[in-house]
Amino acid sequence: TDPSVAQWISVAGGSWNNPLNWLGGFLPSQSRDAHFDLKSSSSYSALIDSDIGTIKNVNLGNLIDSGVVVDVVQGGKVAFKDGNVNVEKGGVFQVSGGEVSATNTLFNFEAGSEFRMSGGVFALTNTTKRAFTLKEGSSFNMTGGEFILSGGIELLYPYGNTKMNISGDAVMDLMSSK
Image 1: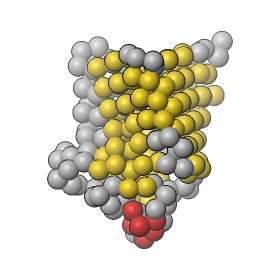
Image 2 (image 1 turned 30 degrees about the vertical axis):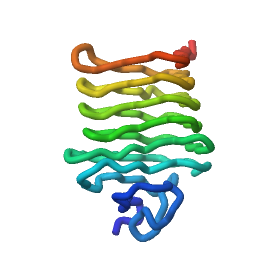
Image 3 (image 1 turned 90 degrees about the vertical axis):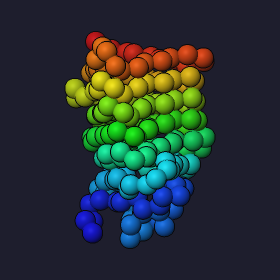
Image 4 (image 1 turned 60 degrees about the vertical axis):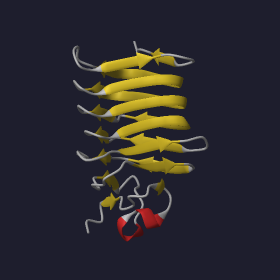
């Protein structure tokens, strides 16, 4: 196995912090990327339910048969720094009550993927030009929580088949560094 990659292996889902859910027991870190490309007949969730520290790269792979939901729940906290979060077909990055902070990180949502937020805080701050990108056929659904983009960030989404829904008690703050 590649020591720079932490591979999720639990089709039943579970806690991000449980070493039994990762190949070889190696958890993701700033120097070990998190990969979710496990094919399954049903979707599964990786719950971030405590402070997991800083992660550089996360790849929610091409999950044609089903999907994975990475969910930052109440009490969960994750920081992304100087990397990429790629969410491919069938993948969902969800914030349902925890805290996500990201610095100089590209969030990329491919067709058939989704960003979902119902609570908590998602804060993306960049000092280099990075983006939160929704590709055609992806979706953004926010019904609660606070979504903050600040610094030199671009929120990119094409017209057409991309769905963007902001409702309920959701707050979106888009701040410029200028």
